Each structure stands twice: as C-alpha cells, then as structure tokens.
Amino acid sequence: MRILKEPFETVAGRPLQEPHPTTVFSPPPGAFAPAPAEARGVDRDDVKLLVARPEGVTHARFRDLPRQLRAGDVVVVNNSATVAGELDAVGDRRGRVVLHAATPLDDGSWVVEVRTAPDAARAVLDAEPGERFTSGPVVLTLSAPYPRDRSSPSGRGNRLWRAVVDGDLVARLERAGRPIAYGYLDRRYPLSAYQSVFSSLPGSAEMPSAGRPFTQAIVTDLVSRGVAVVPVTLHTGLSSQEAGEAPQAERFVVPDATARQVNAVRAGGGRVVAVGTTVTRALESAVDGHGRLVSRSGWTERVVTPADPPRVVTGLVTGWHDPQASHLLLVEAVAGPALTQQAYDAAVAGGYLWHEFGDAALLLP
Image: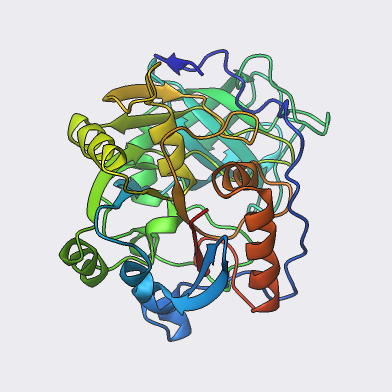
C-alpha cells in the first residue's frame, strides 16, 4: 500500500489482481431502491437493517443499530459531503454527452468520465486524447487515460480520463451541475438527498451512502450507550466501475483524535465498526508497521481484499453491492466469505433494497 501525494501511476482502474468475490447471488427484480427513503414514505432511519453474526442473521430497522453494539465499541463515520458531479456538455466530435467529474488533481486537471446523453446510461469508451467538451464557459480537453496506462478491463477502451480544464469547473458544477445518478432512480433528487448527518467537508463525487440512514437521535443513542462516534474523511470517486476494476485513488484524512480513539478502543477489547467501504479504506490506509492507527492524509490506492485484509476494522455497516463489484471483496475481507454469503442470501430472500438509497447491513464477524 502506498500513500500518494498525487495518483499519477496507481493501480486504480486496472483489473484486480485478485479472485473475483466468492459471494454468489442475483438481486431480484425491483431490488434497486428507486428513491430516498423519505420519498418512499419511510423515515431515513427506518430502512431495513440486517444484522449478521457468526451465530446467525437477524432483521431489524436501522434505528435499532445502537442496541446491536456495546459499550466500548467505536463507530467511525465519513464526514465527506457529496458535491454536484454530473454536468451536461457538448463534445466537438460527438455532440451531447454527460460528464461525471470524479476529482480534481493537484495540478488543476480533473479526472472525468464521459457518458452518453441524456441520462448517463453508458460510459463512452472510444474517446481519444484531444477531444474537447464544452459546458457553458468551461472547456475540458481530454489529455490522457487515467492513470496513464489504464484501459478498460473489458479491453474496449478507456473509461476514466485526465482532463485539462479551461475555466472554473467548480463554479460551473455549483451553478449547473447535479448529483451523479443512474438509471434505476425514478426521478432526479436534490443534492440535499445525498447528504448524511455527518456531511461537512464537500468533495465526494458520489454519496458515502452507508452513513445516510443515521440520524442525530441514533448518534445520541450510541454515545449514551458508551459507543464512541468519530470521523474520518474520504472523498469518493465514481462507483460505475466495470467488473474486476479496482477503485480509483481517493483523497483521505484520518485525524489524530480519531487515531487515538480507535487505538484506545482496540486496546480495551472493543470493536472498530466502519460505516461503509469508504471508512474502511481510509482507516486501513493509516495503519503503521506495528498495526496501530496513525494520523495520515493524502491519496490512497489501498484496496482491501481477502488477500490483503483489514488490520483495524472489525465490523462494518454497509449497503448492498452488486455481484463482482470490488466493494464486495472488501465486505468479504471484513466479514469473511461465509458470513457475507449468508448475509446476501438473507437479503435477497428478505426483499432488501440495493444501492445508495437502499437498506443496510451490520456485519459483526
């Protein structure tokens, strides 16, 4: 694992040098949550919560989470806020497209994905260096695949690009952008729907969705029961990877206060429960050679897998991931393949909802 000042030549976007996830399942028709819980007539914290332990699986509601943990545990959350990362544009060679702005790089260029108009249904894989895309006063010119030697795992072209930006892209996104969304949603939802109670530092292209069902009442309940709640920051990239494609490098911060709290909990025999794959990635990117969590920041390319498992995280709050997704390898690394399979079997049988506005799981191996 390397901590990078800037991710020019990382493994992000290359095919994983890992087996695919062993968990086998097929989400039933209609399993993708079409709208936020509130738009479905359900309170934010009333989504389903599947609790998986070695002794079995139980079903609850997310507001029951504090009762599933014990005094001396710590819950680690992501305080990154979602930004409006989707923008309509016109290409000089291909007409209307949708741009997904993944992240700014340190030299002012951006990592972007070009997708088909009008609904961003598919990635454009035949783009070439030099193509220009205009959105209002901003022009983006593709300079090179990102990373420089990346190609689509399918071998059909490049999905992510480094783009040179002429104009103020942040201002353009704030004025004309919208949250990145995919075709399973029933309509567009405002940026506020993509924030959690922890969202305070803008920077995520897509919502760190595991934290969405939390409410202030849940946080208060956790603390009153002796469960600490501490933050990290990881600004998410794009989740539209092809099967076998590793996550891109992402910016993260593990504060000193969080590192000290987590180390104290571990020393006392408590569990470290990460809220989401983003938190897991951030924490596992800040473990020193002695297995202790330290304060650290930068870019991380850490990919948590069963072959390179977590050293700090011992429990996970997460949503439900697609078959063969790289995030599913992380879930298997934390929970173990057997418990992961048991949880996914129960979620399919129980009609749980998938994706960013869906139901949740608490995995305590």
